[in-house]
Image 1 (tube, one colour):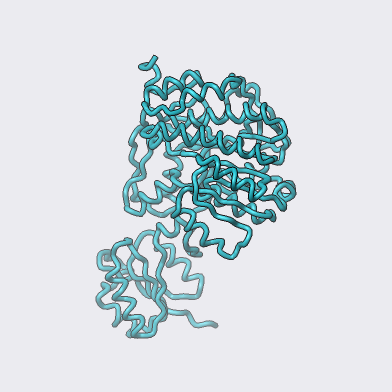
Image 2: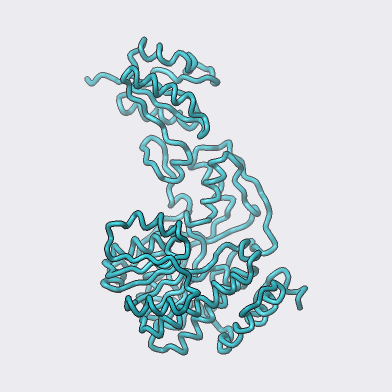
Amino acid sequence: MKKLQKSLIVWKWVAWLQLKKILKTKQEKIVWFLDDIVVDSDVIWKIDVFESIITSFEIEKIYFAIPSLSDKTKLEHIKNICNKLNKKLFIIPSIVDIIWESVKINFLREMNINDLLFRPIKKYNIDKIKKFINWKTILITWIAWTIWSELLNQCFKYWVKKIIWIDHSEIWIFDISQKYLNKKNIIFYIKSIKDKNWLKNIFKNHKIDLVFNAAAYKHVYQMELNPDEAINNNIFWLKNIIEVSHEYGVKDFCQISTDKAVNPTNIMGASKRIWELLIHQYSKIYTNMNLVSVRFGNVLWSSWSILEIFRKQIKKWWPLTVTDPEVIRYFMSIEEAINLVITSMTLNKRWVIFVLDMGNPVKIIDLAKKFIELSNIDWIKIKIIWLRTWEKLYEELILDKNNDKNTIIDEIFITEDKWNFENILEDIKKLEWLYDKKEILLEIKNIIPEFLHKNCKKIN
């Protein structure tokens, strides 16, 4: 019979009590917990007798369970002793590392994306996607956004010919490009799509087949503070890339929209509603080009998402902030969202808004509770901070639920858009060169009557 290895766990902490049970199944005998604070039947001595305990009881493995991210003094002390005595020291990953999945461990339950979605994730239409992507030259704007990093991964999986990256952030492009240094079929450009002449040069040199445009500001609060930039980037620069795409023979163009574009209550959502109308109008004008808009809600672990906020709050041991106990949002995984976005492009439908079925909406407070549960940190509290005036209790994905059309993919459907977009190109000219927020709100309200910004009544 194999001899049990003697192990010692330093610091008795509620999250690491599971480790004791697991190690017993791995033929390891836990001798004791050592702790400077907790005193009970398991904790016999404090950490200052660590060296003598190891020698006296012939301990072979030491597990250090870090109770905080800031206290490194005791760890350094223990590490030096282990080196001196030639003993194995295992550092238990911090809760934050586990949540962010930067480490893998087999003795604690890892955060499961299915648990956070409250449903299983799915993949669709893989064979058709491969055929659609195969040997195309693809341009992706705002590649540094987390979601489009996943798009990049999937395009490589489906044998893309070449990918052109455009982003105005030097730091983001640098970070992501480090992962693909060995790929010869990727070209990076640090540039904004506002420069139409530069765009023409790129399209001329690379003969683009397919464009995924996500170059948009998406942070609601920041766009309330900078409404002119929201209009310029999310409307006029989109106009640039559509017109250049058509001029240089692009066959397929995908514009990413958001559930915040439906009955918008803020400038960011309104700007994206206008670009949906632009896609409609350009589809009518450019009959030889497949222009579609894909609308979906929140994506788990995307840049600046609620889980990113929760992760940063936990790292500082702050309470998780929720705007309202009743606020709900739609969620899907990054992989799932990109799979459905590409699938939408294979359906060969023009002049439509594709809407992704994201399952049932999730209460943010339930997401916070699940986050805490899966992180084994039940002492972290939830703090209600209440909605800002431009935020909704719930987001909508569809304008007219009685007229939705199914597609051959159950999770993708088409929303009928009855709004008048015939004069959209003329209407948006009134937004050009506006900087005053009240003037911008007034013009947006004239273009999209369903705009429900808190200041619209005061203006009218």
